[in-house]
Length: 115
Image 1 (tube, rainbow, N blue to C red):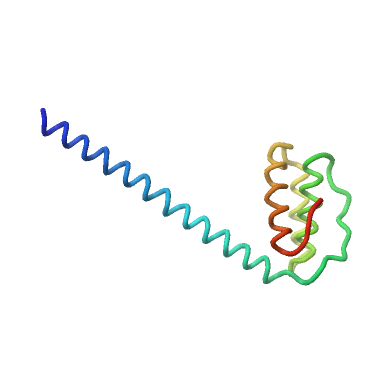
Image 2 (cartoon, rainbow, N blue to C red; image 1 turned 135 degrees about the horizontal axis):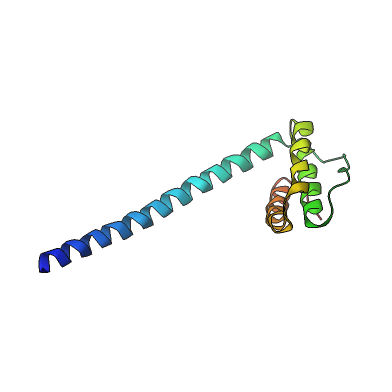
């Protein structure tokens, strides 16, 4: 019975160590992907935006859509990116609130702002 307890305890410790290791591995992968996306976005930026965003949806999703369009105007393929921004008008306000916060950070990283 003692050896079964020791074996189970060892397996428990191994699984905890594996979980912690997996967490940090995935966290590193996500950070690498975010860095690559930010680098690609900054490389695609083409100066200051002169385009005025189109009339967005109402509420929080409208802010997210307008911010997305402001960022899209700086991209290499601005028209395609603006079409993708229209999807914000179809999302729930709770999702748009989270996306808006992320879009504001992206705009700031690109030297712009979303207000």
